[in-house]
Image (cartoon, rainbow, N blue to C red; front, side):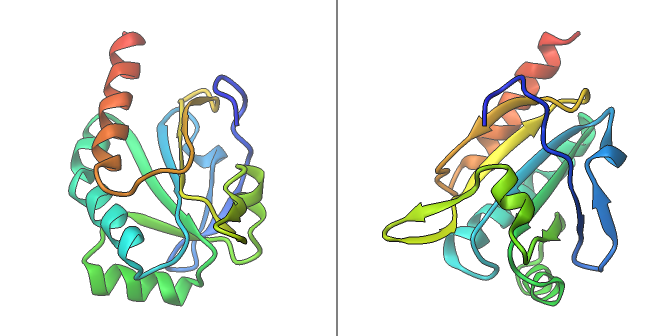
Length: 153
Protein backbone atom coordinates (compact mmCIF):
# COMPACT_ATOMS: atom_id res chain seq x y z
CA UNK A 1 0.00 0.00 0.00
CA UNK A 2 1.34 3.38 -0.95
CA UNK A 3 1.88 6.21 1.48
CA UNK A 4 -0.26 9.32 1.28
CA UNK A 5 -3.23 7.24 0.10
CA UNK A 6 -6.44 6.98 2.09
CA UNK A 7 -6.28 4.14 4.61
CA UNK A 8 -9.01 1.56 3.95
CA UNK A 9 -11.92 1.92 6.36
CA UNK A 10 -12.63 -0.92 8.77
CA UNK A 11 -14.72 -2.00 11.72
CA UNK A 12 -13.54 -5.08 13.60
CA UNK A 13 -14.29 -6.52 17.05
CA UNK A 14 -11.63 -6.13 19.70
CA UNK A 15 -10.73 -8.85 22.21
CA UNK A 16 -13.86 -8.00 24.23
CA UNK A 17 -16.19 -8.06 21.21
CA UNK A 18 -16.46 -4.25 21.10
CA UNK A 19 -16.41 -2.85 17.55
CA UNK A 20 -13.44 -0.62 16.69
CA UNK A 21 -13.69 1.57 13.58
CA UNK A 22 -11.04 3.64 11.89
CA UNK A 23 -13.55 6.48 11.52
CA UNK A 24 -13.93 6.58 15.33
CA UNK A 25 -10.19 7.27 15.55
CA UNK A 26 -10.24 10.21 13.12
CA UNK A 27 -7.98 12.97 14.36
CA UNK A 28 -5.57 10.54 16.02
CA UNK A 29 -2.45 8.77 14.85
CA UNK A 30 -3.08 5.03 14.52
CA UNK A 31 -0.49 2.26 14.46
CA UNK A 32 -2.22 -0.64 12.74
CA UNK A 33 -0.13 -3.78 12.72
CA UNK A 34 -0.97 -7.15 11.23
CA UNK A 35 0.46 -10.34 12.67
CA UNK A 36 -0.02 -14.04 11.85
CA UNK A 37 -1.05 -15.81 15.06
CA UNK A 38 -1.54 -15.31 18.80
CA UNK A 39 0.97 -16.93 21.17
CA UNK A 40 3.62 -17.66 18.55
CA UNK A 41 7.23 -16.53 19.09
CA UNK A 42 7.44 -13.56 16.67
CA UNK A 43 3.93 -12.35 17.43
CA UNK A 44 4.62 -12.53 21.16
CA UNK A 45 7.81 -10.47 20.76
CA UNK A 46 5.94 -7.88 18.71
CA UNK A 47 2.98 -7.70 21.11
CA UNK A 48 5.22 -7.37 24.15
CA UNK A 49 7.31 -4.65 22.50
CA UNK A 50 4.27 -2.61 21.47
CA UNK A 51 2.98 -3.03 25.04
CA UNK A 52 6.29 -1.80 26.48
CA UNK A 53 6.07 1.38 24.36
CA UNK A 54 2.30 1.85 24.70
CA UNK A 55 2.56 4.74 27.18
CA UNK A 56 4.97 6.52 24.80
CA UNK A 57 2.58 6.05 21.87
CA UNK A 58 -0.38 7.30 23.89
CA UNK A 59 1.54 10.27 25.30
CA UNK A 60 1.95 11.58 21.75
CA UNK A 61 -1.66 10.83 20.82
CA UNK A 62 -1.42 7.49 19.01
CA UNK A 63 -3.49 4.34 19.30
CA UNK A 64 -1.90 0.92 18.73
CA UNK A 65 -4.06 -1.81 17.21
CA UNK A 66 -2.92 -5.35 16.42
CA UNK A 67 -4.90 -7.41 13.88
CA UNK A 68 -4.85 -11.14 13.21
CA UNK A 69 -7.30 -13.77 11.98
CA UNK A 70 -7.56 -15.20 15.51
CA UNK A 71 -10.83 -15.16 17.46
CA UNK A 72 -11.69 -12.73 20.23
CA UNK A 73 -11.33 -15.59 22.73
CA UNK A 74 -7.84 -16.35 21.41
CA UNK A 75 -6.93 -12.65 21.74
CA UNK A 76 -8.12 -12.62 25.38
CA UNK A 77 -5.96 -15.65 26.11
CA UNK A 78 -2.95 -14.07 24.35
CA UNK A 79 -3.36 -10.79 26.26
CA UNK A 80 -3.67 -12.57 29.60
CA UNK A 81 -0.88 -15.08 29.02
CA UNK A 82 1.61 -12.50 27.72
CA UNK A 83 0.59 -9.50 29.86
CA UNK A 84 -0.28 -7.38 26.82
CA UNK A 85 -1.98 -3.99 27.13
CA UNK A 86 -2.58 -3.26 23.44
CA UNK A 87 -5.93 -3.63 21.70
CA UNK A 88 -6.18 -6.68 19.47
CA UNK A 89 -8.73 -6.89 16.65
CA UNK A 90 -10.16 -10.08 15.24
CA UNK A 91 -10.39 -10.42 11.44
CA UNK A 92 -11.39 -14.06 11.07
CA UNK A 93 -12.68 -13.46 7.53
CA UNK A 94 -9.38 -11.74 6.63
CA UNK A 95 -11.30 -8.89 4.97
CA UNK A 96 -9.27 -6.04 6.46
CA UNK A 97 -6.03 -8.03 6.30
CA UNK A 98 -6.54 -8.33 2.54
CA UNK A 99 -7.59 -4.66 2.13
CA UNK A 100 -4.21 -3.69 3.59
CA UNK A 101 -2.34 -6.18 1.38
CA UNK A 102 -1.18 -8.06 4.48
CA UNK A 103 -2.25 -11.45 3.09
CA UNK A 104 -0.18 -13.38 0.61
CA UNK A 105 2.35 -16.05 -0.17
CA UNK A 106 4.86 -16.76 2.56
CA UNK A 107 7.25 -19.63 2.16
CA UNK A 108 4.98 -21.59 -0.15
CA UNK A 109 1.66 -21.11 1.61
CA UNK A 110 -0.83 -18.28 2.08
CA UNK A 111 -0.89 -16.36 5.31
CA UNK A 112 -0.65 -13.05 7.10
CA UNK A 113 2.40 -11.05 6.11
CA UNK A 114 3.64 -9.18 9.17
CA UNK A 115 2.98 -5.55 8.19
CA UNK A 116 2.46 -2.21 9.92
CA UNK A 117 0.73 0.98 8.81
CA UNK A 118 1.10 4.37 10.43
CA UNK A 119 -2.17 6.19 9.76
CA UNK A 120 -2.18 9.97 10.11
CA UNK A 121 -4.97 11.93 11.82
CA UNK A 122 -6.40 12.80 8.39
CA UNK A 123 -6.84 9.10 7.58
CA UNK A 124 -3.96 8.76 5.12
CA UNK A 125 -1.17 6.21 5.32
CA UNK A 126 1.90 8.11 6.52
CA UNK A 127 4.21 5.08 6.44
CA UNK A 128 3.95 1.40 5.59
CA UNK A 129 6.25 -1.42 6.61
CA UNK A 130 5.98 -4.74 4.79
CA UNK A 131 7.54 -8.08 5.77
CA UNK A 132 8.43 -6.77 9.22
CA UNK A 133 10.96 -8.39 11.54
CA UNK A 134 9.24 -8.44 14.95
CA UNK A 135 12.19 -7.66 17.20
CA UNK A 136 12.84 -3.92 17.48
CA UNK A 137 9.92 -2.99 15.25
CA UNK A 138 7.79 -1.20 17.86
CA UNK A 139 10.66 1.17 18.68
CA UNK A 140 11.21 1.82 14.95
CA UNK A 141 7.52 2.73 14.54
CA UNK A 142 7.63 5.02 17.58
CA UNK A 143 10.70 6.84 16.22
CA UNK A 144 9.02 7.27 12.81
CA UNK A 145 5.88 8.61 14.47
CA UNK A 146 7.94 11.16 16.42
CA UNK A 147 9.49 12.40 13.14
CA UNK A 148 6.02 12.87 11.62
CA UNK A 149 4.73 14.73 14.65
CA UNK A 150 7.75 17.07 14.70
CA UNK A 151 7.22 17.63 10.96
CA UNK A 152 3.61 18.70 11.48
CA UNK A 153 4.32 21.29 14.17
